[in-house]
Image (cartoon, rainbow, N blue to C red; front, side):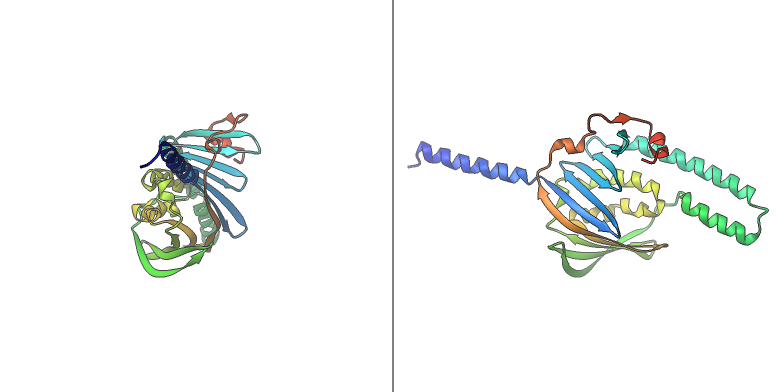
Length: 260
């Protein structure tokens, strides 16, 4: 016959198990690309990205994003739709400026005009049609940062654009809904239209298989490799995903103008 003390003991063990399980509620992921370091914090549909002295916060449930400048104690925050509207307006202005510059350059020597056009294309991203994306499972496996990975290829408009080594054991999908993240990726890719494929349901679907611990991206400027050096599952303080006290909110264009 089970005694009251035995039942209490079993209940205590169960509670300890639940507490220990809930303590492993988030992820901290360190990534290196060349000389650049990026740290991602992920938990309960919240993300924090730290890179180049800047911070981006995302609330996937509320569809809100925040850009922080720690050195200036400035930030901008709003809905993803608001950011996309700002980017669409900015790109419209840039395209108008590009048209005006083309008109002004029509009397330049052909070689000089061509060089100027190439420079403008690099600095003024143009809107492009939705890319055709295919994801291929290569069947190749390996290890990155101590985790088993499987290699997938992302083909965009018929050309190999990216290789991803995905780790099933780094299961961020429990803390970051890929479907809700898609809108954020789509908005941020407006900064670099060549990366619009990243928001494809096929590419975002890879997150349901695990986290990419290595990404090799093929672009017009060369091959870029990003590798995760450390991925740790741990409980994170919810304040990490909030704008700290003492920061002043400014307009997005002012934050950009002041260098983030």
